[in-house]
Length: 454
Image (cartoon, rainbow, N blue to C red; front, side):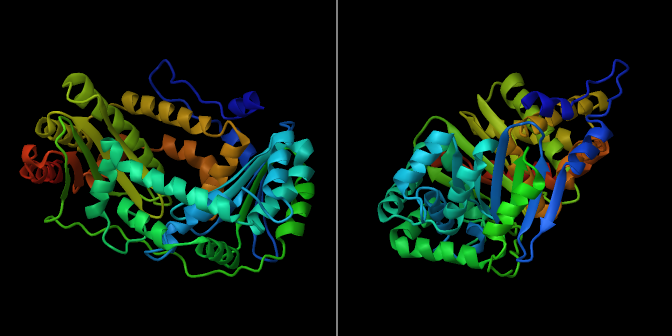
């Protein structure tokens, strides 16, 4: 199965003449699209079926258009809390029975709460679909939320939030979020706010959250399998075809407004290393330049490592990344004993990104590396199901997933320069370090340098 998928997503090697060959054959892309079918049931439930012949494995993901961002402040922990308990027990499948079933048939099952979307997923061997699917349906529609399970999960979440500050590298993210997200922003959930919510909410709130999930927009269901589409669709229609949920107004998210007077947040700690996290708006998942932006961050991440770590030995840990949701979020993280010099080094990398500083051969190399990592995420049925679900959530179509290699091929050096100029200009910085050792003017100078760089 894995060999078949890798062959179907064959990545080309750069040609000896220096020109980049196609990252994936057009025929292969068309084959993937042909193997994918979308059906909308009368209830409004969207079903996406992806055939992988002779694999012997079936994965299903049920995606909900709901996450912490849809919840008001004071209740944003409920999604993660409820979803993490759902797969413990359900009507007709008490904990002991469900555990015995999943162990006997090697069934993987679980639910996850996200920021904009949530999902439940299950993977089993295809011959055991008839045993696994009814249990999965019960988990999605009728979880029992055993009081002990709910309490234990709450205690785990409390312990996890409390432990966040023990790792200053991770904690710097919470520190910068204090100034990046204003109160009430859909993406905002600071550690202390989350702990405050958990202290006030109960099992009744968890149960109410699940009821609201069932009453919300009909889900998107993705199945990746070697089973015949009509067999899978009949089972899904029987279990989900009478969904009573109703659409609601879509989530509206805006990028946080930039306030030049509020660009630095410092957590005062008497430690020898400064842990810094930079945050700035990036391109969203469905943005026109979303694929090009991913490549820009691949290039940016490697350039940061080469300059800050390799050339100047200022840090053992530096990198850049982005999160693409309805709005994109860009970030840089670095730990260093020389924060001023490190800020200058990062600024020099950004200045390089904003100029046409790369050859076509260099950019082609990044494309091959990026596309390889992209294909590796689709080696498993669960990975494919998750990728299809995520793509459909933001695009309303699965085609952009399959078209990504072709979109990547079209990215030019001019695109890298243009997107870098658009993104890398105004950043907010969170720092975990001794306040007496950190001069706020360094961050002001840093932003001035990157804003004017062209």
